Amino acid sequence: MPSPRVIEVSSASARERGKQYGSAAAGAIAYYREGFQRQAGLDWAAAQEHSRPWQRLIERDFPELLEEMAGIAEGAGVELAEIVALNCRGEIMYDNWFAHADVPHEVDGCTSFSLTESAAGDGHVYAGQNWDWRYAIRDTVVVLRVVQPPKPTLVMQLEAGQIGRHGANSEGIALNANGLGGRFDDSIGMPQTVIRRAVLDSPNIADALKILTWTKAHIPSNALLTHRDGFSIDVETTPAGHAWEYPDDDGLLVHGNHYQAFVPPKPAGNQRPMSPDSLVRVPQARKGLRNAARLEKSVDVRTAVHAAMSDHLGHPDSLCAHPDDRLPAIEQWSTTVSSCVDLTSGEYYLAPGSPCEHPYELMPFNLYE
Image 1 (tube, rainbow, N blue to C red):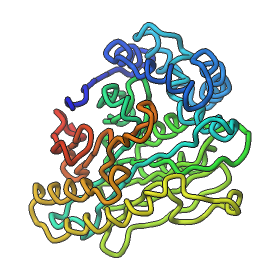
Image 2: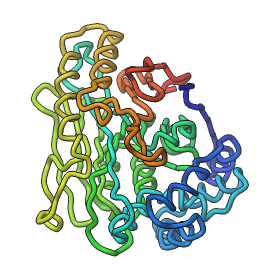
Image 3: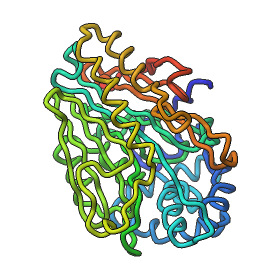
């Protein structure tokens, strides 16, 4: 698999940033034209119409991010509604998985980690994850660096055309995120791409937590926040309430796709893990990542992290995920990107695709430059 495209945009203007991004990125729209039909029972025109309430909500609460989406649409030569639908793809799919019995229910997989305190033997702070999503979108993944004075500079890995997903900023804050599953009510909440971008736009960890806890999300999602000063917290967010957990005594924190801090009361009666393999991936990641504590050189710590995130117990639905040939091609998923960010040094490492097949590559910039 080739290295993901690196796109750098720079402007104080949201519209201009979006135009630069849209002109440089061939987006993921082609996949979702077919994917929404198969996985949500909606053709592309219906998906765009379905996204209208979210567009109004984003315009009300995060107008600058909608302006950036408008710039992406202009730069890419598509309609704004198409970019909004792309940024609401998780919300649209969740709504329709639960609304239509004939639509296959979704599985998802991401495994996030944070190493603080003595969890890394070199004394550095690390954050990262295996981001698992549709195998068919692997060529649309980009690394986006956003210079946006006076806000922090961002580095994110995401699907081309999206404005937020996973990444870190120049204030030393990293965000890694995982789906949790479950539907709580029919009210409209903020899309995850917008929430995650707003978190990464935050100048400090307290503001980032305010975004997570005060913004009503449309769907449940897990957010693992790590700060370069050695602080980390995992927040399980749902439209009905939140819970959180901190690292173990050694500074290790791992999260997958099941509720670990609590089971929300509303769906508790019929709560089932969205991705049962998460119950395997999380302890396997913890076991492998503990090796980083006894290593004194940063290169050896990264090697231990890479080995841990390459675990294959439960293959193909393993920590290092691979396409399952038993599923139709459009439904197959795999590890799209594995990341390991050194928040102490500012070095940003990515393995394109499954980490067992690809080493970590140093991105051509530093978070703090």
